[in-house]
Image 1 (cartoon, rainbow, N blue to C red):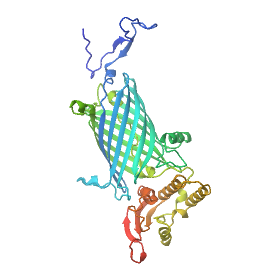
Image 2 (image 1 turned 45 degrees about the vertical axis):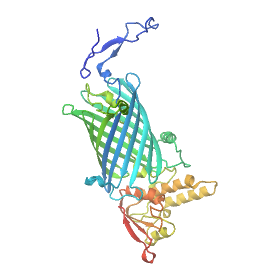
Image 3 (image 1 turned 45 degrees about the horizontal axis):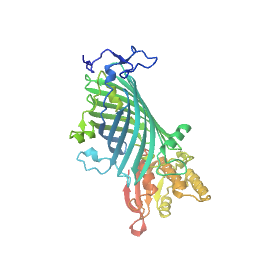
Image 4 (image 1 turned 30 degrees about the vertical axis):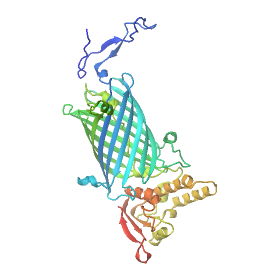
Length: 476
């Protein structure tokens, strides 16, 4: 008589099954009695079987004082069942920032109030893998690792992360989750103070008790008879600049339709890097099975629903990893230099900071208008001594041994700036002709994200009458 399994959407009693089914003509293994059983419930059956790959598209809009930023992203998760309650998965994620939108909706084209030269677009790519396991009907644990790469200002920057995650069903339709991620430093290329391989500097960061990380706790509950799933979260994070640690927090609310198709998000955060910020987002998630194309079927299907007696743990097996996909400009644009003095050593007073590209004409102009440049600070003098020490021990490589520290001191000088800032650009050193200048790749992006800078004006001396400084450009 065929066995009929009950509807998996309802609670049922467990079904005893033989622990081991011997092959025909063989006896059970020694020490195993044929009467022993394991428990298999319909709730566990809901997490067994084929796992549908998920394709998700999203849009986020961030408002942070003078910062207006829109971010488009895509995420694809490919799961593979191993055993009755475990899965390994691959996940590919992309974020794209384009500051020249032609979309007809007004706020979509307001990406930044002003953008850094050469920073009108940015592409972030992440690829990783993980393992998740259901320890019981109501408890999931997992680990993951990712490699991140960012194309910013004409070059690719690499980083990586490792993560731990846990999720558990609560009473009724509720659930809780806890996520921890540790990120490596971002590297543009090999330098004398760190490895280009993210894994190595992750280990070093853990050993020294520093580094970039976040911890997130979430609570989910159904609304309107399981029509909507509400997830509330709180995240604490730290960004490591080598000389200083910048900490912050982020609270969030996610509203997901019961079928798992649409998600709306609202986040409010604050950190020591950009101050207060608000982000709203909208996401579309669909099942995507490209193999269906081979049979002439549509590759798009409905995703796993959120609720299934009561909450669908199978959906958590294939859910996205909760992590910081998109790093701030000030983190990505700079490598970390050990031993750099604190930002306070690069402070020159309110409204007194001056930046330049094209020595000596541009730097001299800073002094002419009564402002200070980086070499006037105590931190700048320390770095100059460091550079001279390297020059005494050839063979040295400028890009490897000196430029990373110069980039870091420039970022520190920009982070320490307050009030109005002026920039002088010698003719021919504009971003179109000199895109790799530290001013465009490091200092200006950091100034734009500095909440203590009230205005940024740049001048050049190209084709100015009498050789003066004109062509004012306002960046903030």
